[in-house]
Length: 95
Image (cartoon, rainbow, N blue to C red; front, side):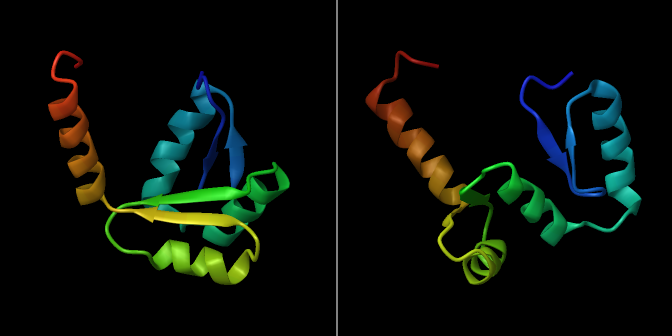
């Protein structure tokens, strides 16, 4: 079972068991993504900060327009890699 609850995009439901997680992985391949419904579930659960990880800011921009007052940040993979390399350089004895 997941240690941290997650939300599956194919049903916009909270996943708390391994069985649900396995079903979501299969369904996510052939079912449409329920993006707006997933965001609504997150908001009902009290989430007020969203981080988009990847190249671009499409989802972040959509969130900023639809969720006024929510914290929204976009972080590119290249920025994450640069931060990792910098930290590794500063503390080379740490893995």
